[in-house]
Length: 287
Ligand SMILES: [Mn+2]
Image (cartoon, rainbow, N blue to C red; front, side, top):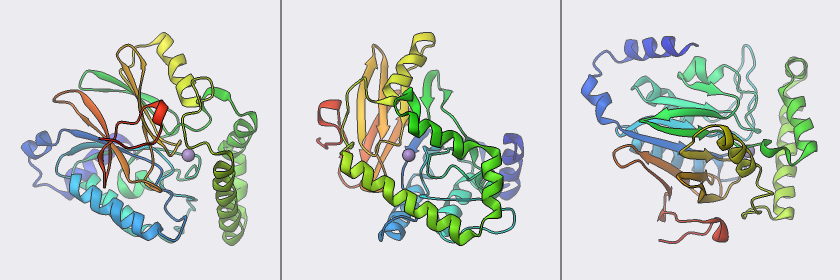
């Protein structure tokens, strides 16, 4: 669905929305990596995410979902994978009420295709993009496969992105597809736990940092904001440029908020408040 169509359908849903209502919404909110569908507490995470979105909807102008919101998804032509109905309904409600929602596809929810744009009015993105928000330039994305540090991940990424492979997948029984996907996802999590990557690995081993610095060499960027790493982080990348990693909504309940009135971009934990997590204490929380 094109952006203009989404705008039109929103106005049709709520004809009583006043311009003042929309103007009073100023915050821009970022959330990533809920991995819904994975783990015994998935429903609880979904309920907390819905309650959070409900809480911010009156103040939120733009919501950026930075990928891996679902642990696995495949959009079929006629049927919908079971689960996640509360979140899907909540996102549609926010979009219908005038919140502009952007979704950066992650490596886990790669095959969402047009489902969220058609059903929920969400604007989908495949790769990192620069947004101008109130005169500040934001480089925004999920964060997988950046910096080209892992050649096997690059190969896997191109296999997953191949249109032919995506078509072939639709021919397989859904039970095979979903059980393979969940086994792959579980083995990924075990690999990351084994390799203990949930801390800052150093400027030369953080793919997102390498990518952002490359982009910054040719254009001005004020904020780089990504997910994927599952560890909350705020750090300067250069004079006047801050990198924020949104951590996750899986092991933590992290989110970031940009307030255009003072141009602040702050990172929070739902239960512990604002986070000040530099690379030396990556993921640690302190007031
Ligand atoms: Mn990811």
